[in-house]
Length: 603
Image 1 (cartoon, rainbow, N blue to C red):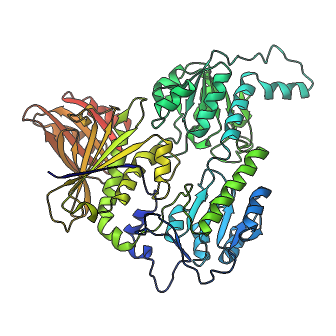
Image 2 (image 1 turned 45 degrees about the horizontal axis):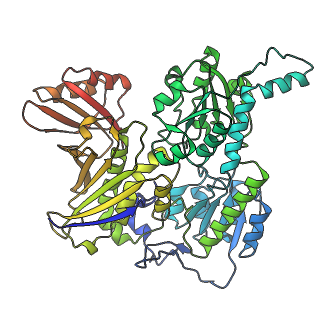
Image 3 (image 1 turned 120 degrees about the horizontal axis):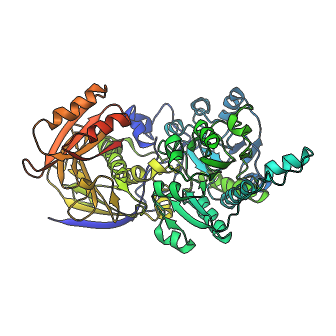
C-alpha cells in the first residue's frame, strides 16, 4: 500500500459557510452574470491565498460606515484609507437605506447586521467589522451568501476583561458594593459585611483561553490555588502559569471561587444549572464576565437562596439590559455591572485600532486571521466534495465528543483513502471541516479556511494528514476518511482502537455520509440526526430491547447497525435517532443488563 504523509496545522470552515451550498451551489459562483458581488473571496492556485476584489471603481476611495462609537485612533486609521461615515443609533430601516452606499460597516454589539441589511446593500457591502469578540448580532450565513467578509477584534480587550473579573471577585469577597450602598444610606454595619479572604482559596477558571489565562496569572499573584477546565488548553501553557487542568466535574466540585470565561455555544448554554449547582461546594462564589447565557439565571437564584452559592458577581446577562425587576439583579448577595469587561480607555482604543486595521486590510484584499466566516470557493469544487465536506465535519464532531477527562485534545491524525494521485485532490477544505467539527462545539471561534491555522495553533492542536491509496474509482474523490485522536481518555471505551487512540471512520454512500467504524468495530449508520453508541454482550434480542425503550419514549430510530468481533462475544450497536432522548430514556438503555456502556453523540 502506498502512503503519502504530510503535516498541517488545522484549517477549518465557519459553521454556516460551505454547507450553505446545500440549497444553492450556484450562489457561490464567481461568474454570476446578473449579480456579481463587489467582493468575492475565493481559493486560488497561488501559494499565497488572497482575496480578489472585483470592483468597477478601483481608483475611488471605499466608504466605511461606523455605526457605533469607535475610538479616535481607529477613526483616524480608517480616514487614511477610506471615506468614513460616523452615523450612530440608526434604526433598522435607516441602516438598510444607508448600507447600499457603503463598502464596509463597523459595529459593536448594539447594531444588528441582519439578512435584510445584506440584501439592501445590493452586493456593495464587502466587509463587516465587529469591534469586539462576539458576533451574535451579525447574520453569518447571509454574509457568506452575499460574499461579505466578517472580521472581529478578539485580542485587544483581553487584559481589560481579566482585570474586571479580578475586580469583581475581590469586590464580591469583601462586599464592597453592598457596604458602599449601606454607608451612603447612613448606616454603619461592619459586622454585616464581614468578607472572606482570597489567599489560599481554590479558583476554578472555566475556559482557559486568552482571558482565562490572564485571570489565572493575576489570581496566582493573589495567593490563590488555581485549577482550570478547558478541553483544548495546552498542558504546557497551564503548567507554565502554575495551573492544574482538571475535568469539568472536578473543577466545580472543589472550587471556592468559579470564574467563567467560556464562549456561549449550544454546548455551554446554561451549563451552570440546577444539576451542576448541586455538585458544587456549599458556599461557592461565582464570577461571570464571559456571556450571560452560560448560566441558568433562575437556577442561580435558587442556588443563592439555598445557600449553595454564597455570592455571585455578574457583568453579563442573558438579556441585556436585564429587566428592572430581575430577582437575580436585585438579590442582596449579587454584585452586578453593566457589561464593563472591555470598558477601559486603553481597551477601547486597542479594539478600535484592531478592528480598523482588519477592515482596511480586508478592503485592500488581504487575508485577516480574525475573519469569522469562510471565503467563497468555486462551485465546481464543492459540487464534487460536498458530501465529503459534510462527512468530515461530522467525524470531527463525533471524535471530540468521545473525549473525556481534562487532558485536552492535542494530536489528531486524519487519513484519506483515495484512488487518485497525491496531487490530484486538495484536502484543505476537508481538513478545514474536520477542524471545524473538533473546535466549534466548545468554542466561540468560527473556524474557516482563513483562520484555521491560527485557531489551531492557539489551542495547541496539531493535525497530521495521511493519504493512502484506497480502493475504488478515481472518479470518486475519496473512499473513506478516518479521524484519530491520540493521548486522550474516552467516555466510550470501545472507541479506543488497537493503537490506543480514539478512532472513527466514515464514507459516503449514495451521497449520504455514513459512520462505518468506531474503534475496532465495524458499523454502518447514516450521519443524520444524532447517534447512540452501545457496547453490549452479543446475544439475541438486543436490537429489540433498545428499540423498544426508544419507541416507548417516542424517539424515532432512523438507522441501526451492529458490529461485533465474534458471535456471542461483544458488539457495538450504532443507532441513529431523529430526536435527542431524555436522560431518563438513556438511563433505561444503560439499565439493560447486557449493555456494558453507551454514549449519546449529538451531530
